[in-house]
Length: 251
Image 1 (cartoon, rainbow, N blue to C red):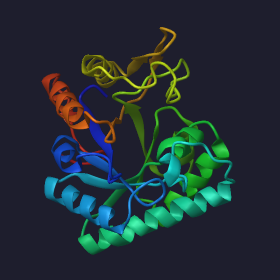
Image 2: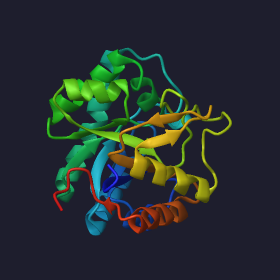
Image 3: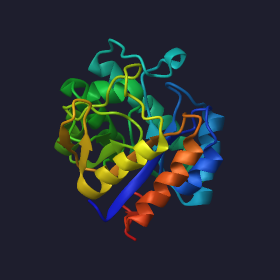
Image 4: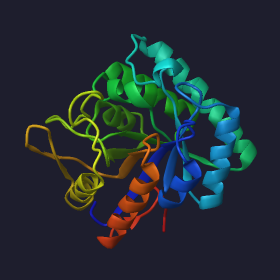
């Protein structure tokens, strides 16, 4: 921490300029049919990842395209496992056809946030990832139940922090739609990024300083100014002497 970080973005969701974002990031989590994406978009995003040398991962979610996977559903852990398995395998098949190795799995939206605190859901996700391929990295909210579940399954876990999302005093993301949940100003986002990358901490909504492990930094690719944010965040990290590399990269 403080010398190296992965910079990831959620892509293939049909609502951003993926081709313009990818040159600035090191990992991409690709929508694989649950909240967004289809075979064509997965293939296109994988090809862009290959062209730019960006590590590719799966971004499974609740099967809820109407709400973009951002509504928590009352789904038992067994059904969560089924959804994750189906979506990850769907992307994996296309990735194999394209000659792109799948590097990680990162749940999307409400599923990600539920798994941060619900250990049964977290265990279902982690066990499914381990069953598909135990070499896959699990991206999980820093300090969450999902991170603990991944470690318990023997997976490599990348503790994730966010460039443009607000935090509460527990180190959880503030719910979308509440004040301060999304950081709109670029300068405020850069300040948070630097604090996370250099010091492993974030300022919560109540003014407390929360310690967080920062292995990978996420930017949401569906925001209208994602390209500007991606470029500025990458430049800020490198200006501070931080090596921006895909998680697990040896160089």
